[in-house]
Image (cartoon, rainbow, N blue to C red; front, side):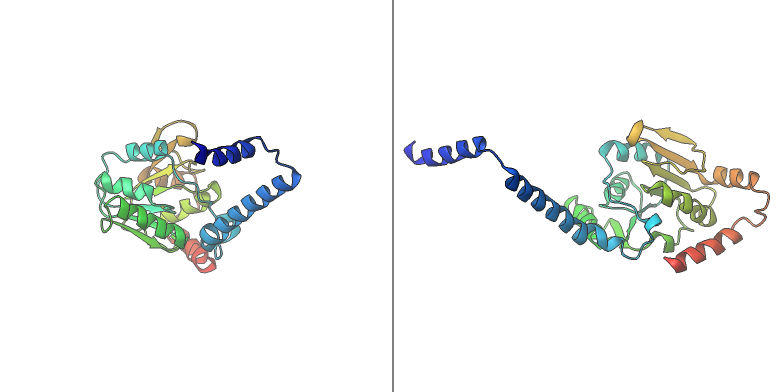
Length: 232
């Protein structure tokens, strides 16, 4: 017991010691440096070549959000693509639910590495695929199931790419934020956990009804998207 007394005394002193202004300043500085290190090492690399309005902060999807997305995908078959896949949790769950292939596209190299580590730890290495690629340059013409957790400023532009490239039988599921100009066919969850499902055939018909000038369904959209690809 006597050998433990010095440690107990030191612990008691730490608990009762008053932290002065200098101590608080040191704590604040240390916390700020830690946050900056995370930003520079993990988050910033994916933003360097991306215009400000297209940047999407990394916010991991909650379990409820993932569950709601999967509920909206019930009955769907084939492969799945997650645009802006982050740490890869949507892709992993999609693979568990039988979607093959399940592919995530993410621009941040550190998040791609983290996603691959999660896949290895889950025993799904080789069954899922994570690619470091700009989502604006991804060819979606053969995709049937698309998931996105993106900012509203990005979703408003992504609408045109999806309309131009996806077939009528494709299903798009958005988590956290809905597409601003689209009408969902189904909604799951409440608040920040809500997810929205969109049938592409319905969105395309709605778009054409409200735009009499759009006489060529995909031509004009593809021209605009080619300009966006060149600028990104």
